[in-house]
Image (cartoon, rainbow, N blue to C red; front, side):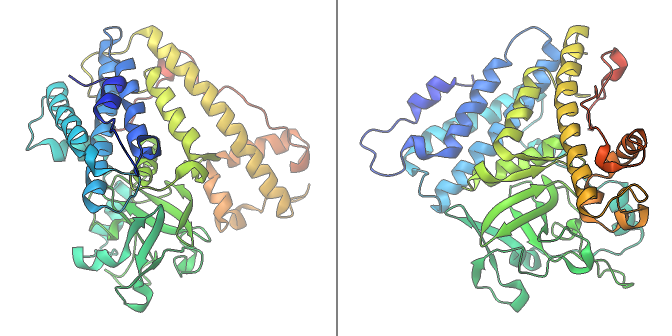
Length: 408
């Protein structure tokens, strides 16, 4: 049986602690919150949907406890007290058994189940470039090691791959040539997170007409599934921004949330990190994770893997929640796009950059999903973007047809 938060707090409470106090262990506090979330979903109503949500939280508990144990073994995080290892390991084993019970998978099959449930395989775009056309360079385990981000004391370190040196230095996407040929947003580097939570980041470049020469998100893990991939911004070891902008993998919001949680697991203070889900505006990391958890509480996990269809009521609750979230975030994105166009010389006879210039602009590409709506608002404003009125229109209909199942 999965312990409650109170039980786990009691089990991990140490007497006579000089360093590594429980309140300082952010990852342990995250596990507390996930236990609360799990038990909040543990009811009989809407059983199929809540079961899918519980499985989602169980997977996150698996990654969190596994990550805590790895950090305790490495000794690289001063806030993690190894004396708590027996209690965390006991919880880890309970979670593994609960996953097996809820899903019917065996322990041998569990790694592939975790990939299928929480990972992201390449989409058609990535498969076409890598496998059909053969453009991608796939790195061996030894080759990708130099691009791995090592987190110590909340800061990201990396081998000096640009000097072909194994010496570690503070990672910095702002001064390294990660942005060759403008494939990645300025000041950012491409990244991929393995299923074990390891981050890799390095140069990202097109093939230049030579097969097997392009460096894509898929290069680091040789085309295998990832927890997430996209763009990350790091300045002097401090992670400041992260997004899920990857054409190869096209990660969704849950993948991006797992990437943020993976940073937290490795001791990164996520409080000041800005998160951008593709096609939306930026949001603080803690608020982003809170919204993901709120989504679960109103049965966001409408999954093809659950045994029962959601009730009509839970579908309406879900639609209401998505409407409020989406229309607020869409309004923020449209406001950002409007300001960006104005700041780049938009005027009545030339709203925005013009189509071709938009295609070359990183900020415009990030908000491409909103171009048509912004163009319509500009037309309503007499062709002047400065007079366009951005409103928070409803994002989804509330009927049964308004619910879209998440991707498998």
